[in-house]
Image (tube, rainbow, N blue to C red; front, side):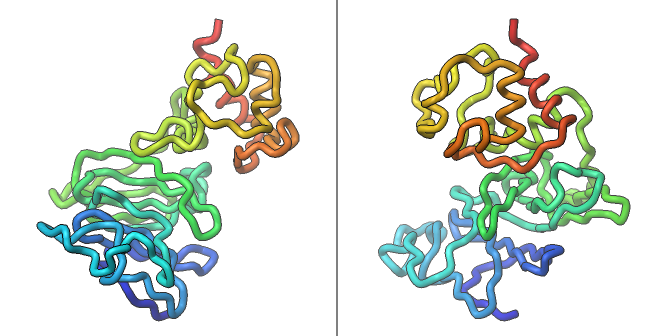
Length: 256
């Protein structure tokens, strides 16, 4: 497969469905994650979400952030995090992350779990390690190890405490560590009126609901958001009974 318009490729992951994902450094800002397509042009040096080091004259195209005829990145980091290795997570060791991408970074000293939808990254969950992460590997038994510039080999362990399901399934949209949340804060949601977080632009489907969130209502909503509130923009993969119960219990922990 051949593509062009890349600046400084760092990581390459071949997913189980055969698609190829790539991470690369932008200039000053604009690190990218791309889904590689045969013959596609990703724009460098004509378009970028960054600027050249020490200069305000980049990109060459004065409308450089409009990719136009060029392929848009699936995800761009502004400011830069200095992306490095990239892998697809598979198997039972991290079952709720199965099929997600895991991206390493140097400058940010953080792993990013990337949830995909089609050819886009819909959220990135940061997992800070506090070290420059050079390489990643998933072992045959499913364990994930990270190799750092300081020579430390770190194993990523699955959390088993309260909130594990919330962190894996909900936090990326409702409590991200960076960027704007895609969903409203869920702190204190049990007992709170539906669609009542000030300043959040709820869908008409949720605004039409009356009453407060109860554990039972949350369970029904998480079971099938479209059946509970037809037209909602909430998009959630199917959750088994155990995962729903864990999320609802975590969200109910401070309810009276």
